[in-house]
Amino acid sequence: MAQHKIGIIGGSGLYHLEGFTNQKWVKVKTPFGPPSDAFLAGRLAGREIVFLPRHGRGHRLLPSELNHRANVWALKKLGAAWIVSVSAVGSLQKKYRPCDIVLPDQFLDRTKRDFEHTFFGRGIVSHVAFADPICAELSRILFRAGQAELGAVKSAKNGNRIHQGGTYVNMEGPAFSTRAESLTYHRLGYDVIGMTNLGEAKCAREAELAYATMAMITDYDCWKVDEAHVTVDMVVANLMKNAATAKAIIARAIPQIPAEPNWPCHDALKNAIMTDRKLWPKKTIAELRPILAKYL
Image (cartoon, rainbow, N blue to C red; front, side, top):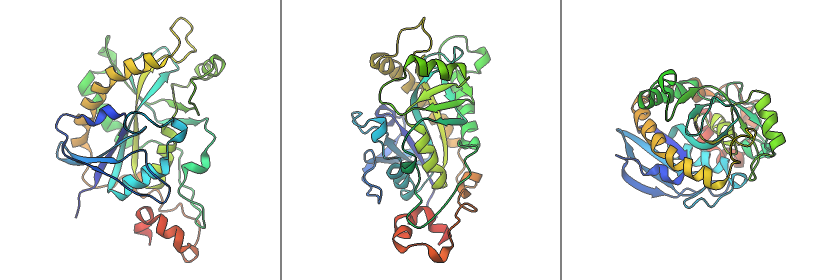
């Protein structure tokens, strides 16, 4: 039996992982249109890896232009059972400093594109459980790997720190928040803000992929008036600092991910599809074959 692969979605620089061997770019056509880019397949720490540069090589796609369905469908088609997402976020609370890492366990949806965050419709109705949108098992592995790389949060007085849990506000973008928006999210106690991860998480759950996010803090958004306003230069500078840390944590985490997909996320559709199997349209079945295969 072929080994199930580990998907990684992140910035273009992340595929320069030490020990990432047998690299080959693979193009995938999907029924939902083109993914962000080709996928870089290879081996790392004894496992098969499939990497996708989220915004395309050279950062050519806006957050609102990302085709989450195509990206996740292609990862499923390529044999991935887990997705580690790495993305830049702004901090909404003082305790999360630039270059810290947050492993969120909740999302607040402020996007306007829900219809693009589901594979279903077109004759098949499904309602997956999404109360806990992050795979807890995968997030714990990333946290342990982060602690091993950075040291425990309480003892890390300087440099990067890693925090388990928190709410990720997924705004639409591409402009950064207004101060009124940022202050509102800060006062409501939310933790970080970004533009990309919710759609990935929703599609991953429907595709029965275990999904977890490493939210790499680049700035304090604009609620913190005693800090400089967030700029692209600031984000890019801290992204470069964060990239090395993210790569080191991923390399530590990969050997801890099980060989077989047997977590609850891997059976997310088991009791979620409402439409009688006899009524599933052939065209929709064909489009969703990688996702529905074990239910056919």
